[in-house]
Length: 233
Ligand code: ZN
Image (cartoon, rainbow, N blue to C red; front, side):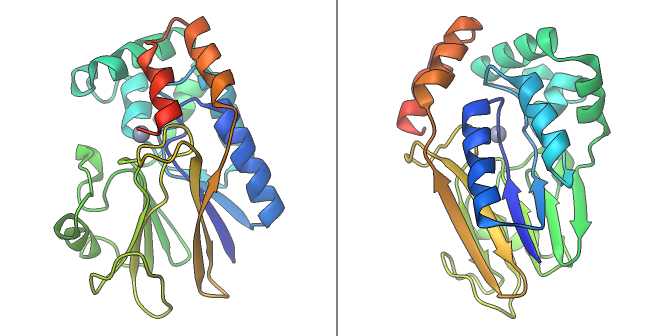
């Protein structure tokens, strides 16, 4: 079985469309979304619609939960708050209901998906370090757990080895962000797992950042949300 994992799309349609093209070219059985479909970017309706059309399943991210009102807006940065308020004004009611309907954690085959952490998914904690990751392993029972939230891709095995993927050992994997890279590489990031071959790949895709930035400007969203995309921060 081949799975593609996309996360932290953040209403960046250009990045999502280019990523889906690449996923289609690679050939997968299922696309799973790890949340934060909306927030920050200028195309929330288009991105939610595409996820609904193309993904087998999605979990809810903190920005999705902010837009539905389930997570208090006070928990977000100034730029995050502006984008959530703007998204609340433009997002269709049926898409709001879809975001509200998403679970925090979902398991399919030998895979757990969650936005922030399997340990306390409702508190939106961040997994940055090995101690953070170590605490996660006790909180899922599958061979693989995929997450997003920090926008920084990583692979770590249960014995604490980073940046290598091997068969027969459990892994915690962050697939990075489709719509707002934060690792200094200004490209969309997603993951592809092949359970038959026992392989995992982090894939990076270029997209037209200029077009997204123009749309951010046109929507009157904070200019910084566009500028940071050029730098991948
Ligand atoms: Zn995010």
